[in-house]
Each structure stands twice: as structure tokens, then as C-alpha cells.
Length: 253
Ligand code: 5RP
Image 1 (cartoon, rainbow, N blue to C red):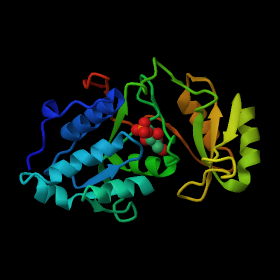
Image 2 (image 1 turned 90 degrees about the vertical axis):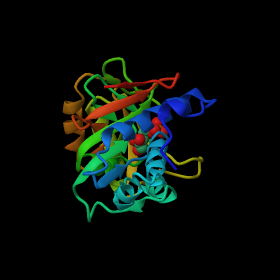
Image 3 (image 1 turned 135 degrees about the vertical axis):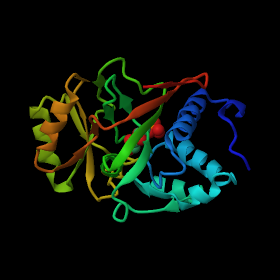
Image 4 (image 1 turned 45 degrees about the horizontal axis):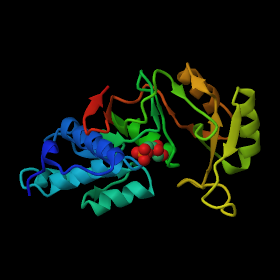
């Protein structure tokens, strides 16, 4: 079955979903060299679902199927493992494929310099491992994610920071000393659930630093704290960002 052209797709009733699909489909169409790329990173979140779906469409197209069936897809967590398998793609591991040709992943916020906040889905460590092991890192996002200029955090969605569980009090205190206005250990769905535990058996802290005029410097300071595994600030890492609009058009930065 030939890959449907983006222009021929049925309109989705939900504008947000349309924007995610448009961004992800175009990102796949324009950033994979089907002849030379072999190892593909598949990130996490609701936008990257459409990237995996698009790759699944290429797999069913006789012109591409032999090449795509040889692709090894590297996941960034449980959800992306399932996305790879559910779309009929070959699952690989970063242990066996430490050099990735192109990685596709979502973002929680994107600034003018393509610095990102990630980790809303609690997968930031693997997402950073995969994106920084990739020759190209392509961000796919909807129109809500582009910051006017600088990244900005707030009480509800701070900078996600993966930490060693026993260090949560110490890291919380240290983050406040660095200027965080609010610091919370991310909790599970219900009051009884307790802290969210990442795929690496760590906790997550969300730290509100307001507007981030120098995210690189803040990343370095947070990363240096004892107990911090990784931050959700992705600095100087993204190659391009595909941002879908409500009308199905896409802006590429
Ligand atoms: C998960 C992430 C996601 O990529 C990010 O939260 C974006 O998700 P969505 O595409 O659902 O908006 O960083 O850790």
C-alpha cells in the first residue's frame, strides 16, 4: 500500500491531534534517508506516536518495505518500545547501537535557539541518551510548545530532573539555593500512589525557575548537584523542530 501523501489525509476533528500528526509525518518524510539511514530513535509522548505510525506506513509500501524492515528502532522507554512493536518495526537497543542515524522525539517547550525542556512523560534520561547519540535529532511538537523566546517554567511544569531517590531532600534544598521558586517530587496518579518512579528506578523533581534566559548555565549547575542523574534541559542538541499548527500546516525551525 503506497504511503498516503500528507495532503490527502482525512482531516482530524481534533485540531491539536491534526497539528501533532502534520508535524510528525513531515518530520519523517523530510529527515530519513531511506537508503543510508539504518538506526532510528523513537522518543516518547503523544506526538511521536504519529512518527512511528508514519514509519509503519512506509513499512507497508512495497517501494520502501525492504529498507524499512531492516531499520533498527531504538526506544526511549516503555511507551516507545510498544510504539515500535505495534507498528511492526524492529526493536533494537542502545547497547548494541550506540550510534543512531536520526532520532524523533517530542518536547514540552522549545525556545528560539532550539533548547528544549523535556521529561513531561518521565523518560528524560533515555531521551537524552538517545538524542545525544544521534547524528540528527528532530523535534516534533504541536503549536503549544513554542516559547515566545526563552524557555519558561512555572509551578505546575518546572524543569523535570531525574534524581537518585535517597537524595530527594538534599537535591530539593540545593535547587532552592540555586533559585528555584517551587520544587516538587513528582507524584503518581492518586494521593496514595507516592512518587513517580522512572524506568531507571529513580524519582523526578519538577523545579520552577521561572523564565530561563541562560538554560545552559542552569543545566550545568543542576547537573553538578550530588544526587542528580540528568536534567530535562536539552541544550544545543536538537537539529530541527517541526511544529504543527491547528490548520495542519507545519513551521520548521
Ligand atoms: C517525555 C517527553 C515528551 O516527549 C514530551 O512530554 C512531549 O510530549 P507530547 O508529544 O505528548 O506533547 O519529554 O518525557
